[in-house]
Image 1 (cartoon, rainbow, N blue to C red):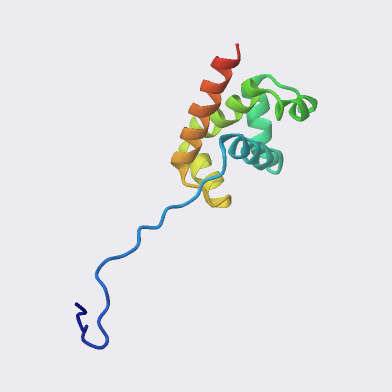
Image 2: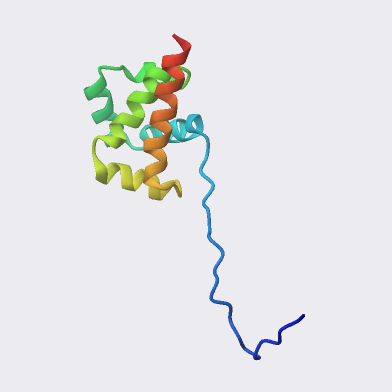
Amino acid sequence: MQFNRPSGHVSRLKKKHIDKQPPAEEIAAMALQYLADDAELLSRFLALTGLAPGDLRDASSQPGSLLAVLDFFLGFEPNLLKFAEANNLNPESVVTARSILSSDEAHSD
């Protein structure tokens, strides 16, 4: 059986849009790059963590350092929101990425 719809009828059902977020490691790398591109944020991050500027290259391969980068953004919402907006991310995806990376690090010990 086929039903005829009145012309110009718009379905009330909308497709739910699901944003695909990058993997946790990619979000952490994006956060590190965002820091590296902002001298003021980078200076603050280095002061808070005690890392030296030369340590940043190694940070991208160190799970603990990547967690520190994500924690830096999660610790100050305005910076988190700016980072998320600049990278077209949902801010909650940073929380999720941090959780995944900390779980991965716990399992690797």
